[in-house]
Image (cartoon, rainbow over all chains, first blue to last red):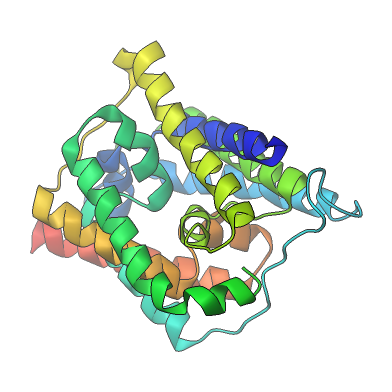
Length: 144
Length: 140
């Protein structure tokens, strides 16, 4: 329960950051992705600021023996660059460019009431399920 | 090329908040705040893995609800794509993020912060793919 409450608050702040930065507006994201004429560089600064803050606090946390509400830090397994990474990133990029939505902003802006956002989120969950469900038991045995 | 609609102050402030939230998840639960990974991991058979993930996603949605309730005039939202394009995009984002192991937050923020070469390559690839897609959509 404490972990769920913490995760809810983190989601709230994460979403607030997306709202403040304008990343919940697909037109603004597309303004970054359209580099040919009128370019909006804002998204690059959002990422730079997020990386700067997280990089520092991430390292500070690792000096502690464990997280405050969990047994250990879940470090992703070190893996190389493989075909799955390349194909997955390219598919995601095409979907991002076709809509201006990546997963976080899509969920935040589902609150705005446009049925097309609900359709995006539903389609995204179907896509996740297509990729995940066949390996569900394997995933549960693994690190994730 | 000209620079338009550039909002550096809100971009930096919002970005810092996103970084802070990601750090909060790491400090509290020891988990990396990749939104696609949080969604994908909710397809689990264990409630302990499902509950905090659903709570995080509820927090995201709640931030949007609070925004339209408290500051409705300040919420900018313009989705240029039509329904069919949006559905296709959603499926591609869903599959792509799971196969590629991350999205703009997981690879883009957490992975780049950890200097993961894998994540840096993923960011360059999905940015390039998105830019080419937008170019074809708007100029094709």
